[in-house]
Length: 126
Image 1: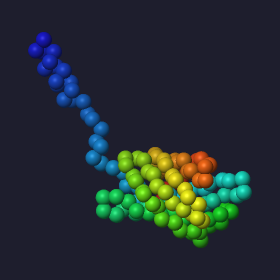
Image 2 (image 1 turned 30 degrees about the vertical axis):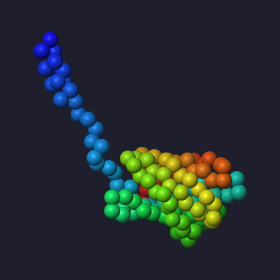
Image 3 (image 1 turned 120 degrees about the horizontal axis):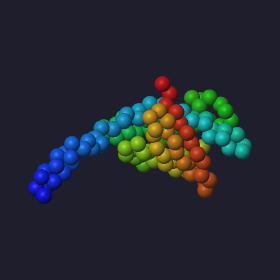
């Protein structure tokens, strides 16, 4: 019995646990396009490091126009934990809630806009 306990202790001691202390850097520009029946919004989510957290804003433009000429709106209640990001924003005065996950260079999210749930895929601009 004591030998089994020692073997179990050695086995447990050799198991490599994931390192949750390191986190990815999500700073940068994440470009997206959302299609609606009336047209499309193109835009970008711009994330910057601020202390231990992030700050940022979204820039959007309607009807396939260049997002860099679009409407800027701050990301409110921005939370990034692990690979998950949530925030609120108000482009063109619309209340928007965004909730999604990063997968390397892609951010996939659900956008809630006036009761509609719309998928969003943003790719990091390199």
